[in-house]
Image 1 (cartoon, one colour):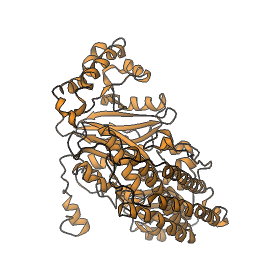
Image 2 (cartoon, one colour):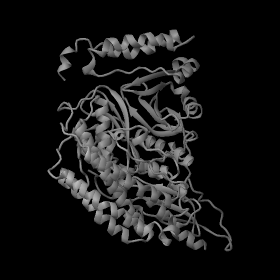
Image 3 (cartoon, one colour):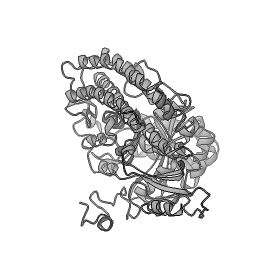
Image 4 (cartoon, one colour):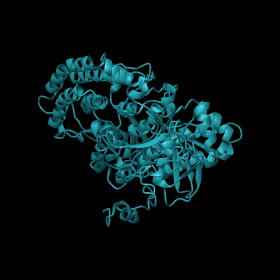
Length: 393
Length: 222
């Protein structure tokens, strides 16, 4: 037994393990030996390059430590060396599954700093695209999360349907993933001819598809076994750990920035905040499924009420916000995405801080998997819905 | 931006900025808010109209909560509001107490973010910023303090567990040490990395070449 322990610890760098008790006394053969294994950084279930060091007692997880930073590009440093306009495309590369949300948060933060507002038509276009992106992000989450747990079919279904959203993005701005859809002060592009028709067609097409996903999973015996009471986290724990987004709501806290502190023009739309009760992986699944339906409601109202008018506000060509600082945050598909910008009155941000939801939510992984099985770690990483591009920035 | 012609009177903004601090020691004894209140209409009246192109200035922030703490801590606390966002500029010595009070008494139960800003020309080079949110009040507040290079600051992990990774990132990027942090080490950069990249004197193309050569086996990361 002790040999096995030694073998498996060889490629773990011990210096980063101060959290875990490596000095555990040698046990007799009858005792269970603690085992330290390394998951990732190259592992299909970590959704990117995340390394999780697991301390195990047999199949039971005694503790974890995340090693991150493999995708660190220094986005905040880059921001200080680019103008406000030039930095805009960079934010798409953080959470690349929800690039539109990132862009919305950034543009609104700079607009707030400059005390300007996007015109109503631009606001509607923003809401439509952002909510479509939320659906796309949740679809990608569902497909990959189900695949991790062993259900392969949802991946094909969700990617098939996500394609329709990406086509709308492509027709609107030419890009599918890193859209750079918005500009500071509004939108650069007017909607293309047939945009509204495309969006309405998508809504009609997608409504039965969610039912299809749910038919595959919601009452599926294997799905229930793998997700019920797995990765449980309580509401107060979520708040203490700063966890936001669907994870927080699945733990019974009814909090969504679109309602709590409405930005863009979300106050105009009628929608509900779905919440869960148990805070387990299954509830988080249900919450996200409901969120897709609510997003469809918002898109429907927005596309029917889209006003005529200009799409760019009165913004100078050279963006030069006055001296000051601002924090603005939005409800991204993964949680609270915030931008803290300090301006020194020049064309470049003096300091730009991104408050990434994935980074903060990932911190809860340890609490959520302690005491559960190794296989559940995979389920929990999936259910937190992290994007490593955003964790590492 | 046509209004820029009207700029002859932009000196008021810096003055307006200083006003609250200048008045505080005199008013600290009895009711600090009242003397601040007459200054408030005076300050915006002057800059509001002409200073528009140069932007708004931080104003004194008055609320029952702030009043309470100002009578308690006096000049160590400077409550300001800018573009509708409230923040407290707090003396470094008050740091763990104010944060704890904000959580325990004022229900700021969610620490949204902790970050820092580097001002190399200042004597106290760093601003450390806590962004807090209260679920019961649906309200945000920022707490700011200034510390010198090399100085440390008490960790807020005992107050909000979420501060763990956030403080590690501040340490990683700025080299600010948090006393009492359970596991203060680099988080995004490799453990052996030298220097702190978000300091202003760290160039955008700069890298720890030695680390790159040893660990990646290549001449340069550029």
